Image (cartoon, rainbow, N blue to C red; front, side, top):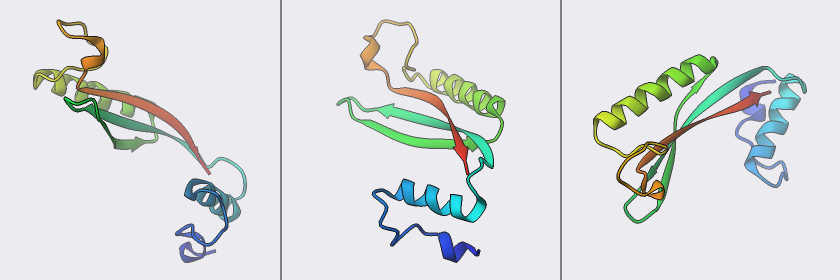
Length: 107
């Protein structure tokens, strides 16, 4: 099966693109998990409370994701940003930036 036969996930009648993507990968590679990844996600909160979410990176090793998260957190603090979870003279809901690591299985 070539990439053109299963990507992009269109015309499958699936309810969402994620389900279509998962189904096509499963058909192409079988139902077993090929690998696990860690996704480093950054969230920035504006002065008005709006949150902008972006993917910083996708890592095979969790240690790499943790190292990048620590580096990004250090750089944000050095730039004067309020990092979620930090103690300070500000309300807990008044953070400017945060990072989370999500583990996902790729099939």
